[in-house]
Length: 266
Image (cartoon, rainbow, N blue to C red; front, side, top):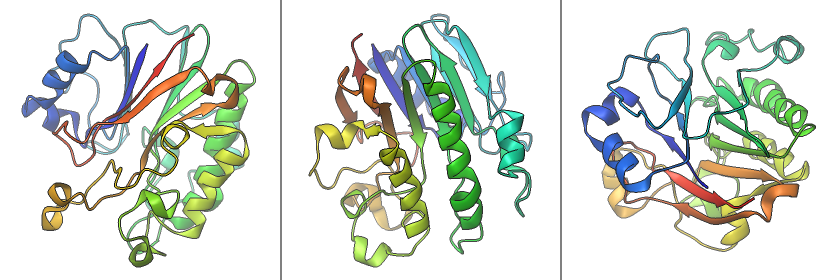
């Protein structure tokens, strides 16, 4: 089974370019997780009769949003967090708005595992959303994942908006303290690892450098491969040994992010 994750930076944009259709035809994912769709279901011209579609869109038009397209119909689908988690971490109290209503998480239950896709809030260049990330969002998402893991193993993926270690970003000395590479954001990722979740790409390529998933549009960064690895597949320890062929696909264009993928054999 092939699972892909892709921050498309606007599903309408990537379909209008023809890049999304080409990607589906060439890669044929069994389960596809999308982030930053910036649309509601039906607003993009998508014709995928072999897939079931599940969308969680932001209340604010043209903003954020995630989706899961699957050839296999899930047993259940959950949009966002439980009310208990939303209230516990006070996710509505943020100067940018209620992060629980920004369409950032979908959890799909399959026979032997959960698939969760997430578009983690950006801490912002001035770090004005770092408190949300560090004290609210990251702990809330971890609790959500751990709660689902009680029933079956979890695979979660998406744009986590953080480079975990220095090997995951170009020129890490110059990036230290910048949004996406602060100690607070990186500690949030550490907490996933400390709770038994495996970074599937690093498990397969522990020392591989220059492996990035996002590039700024400035200064021809993608062509020069001056980027960040901020898109991930993480797996419960109990299922990680069934995951293979973790890949980054920088040759697939259409967004400022490229797709990533894994294969799982159960």
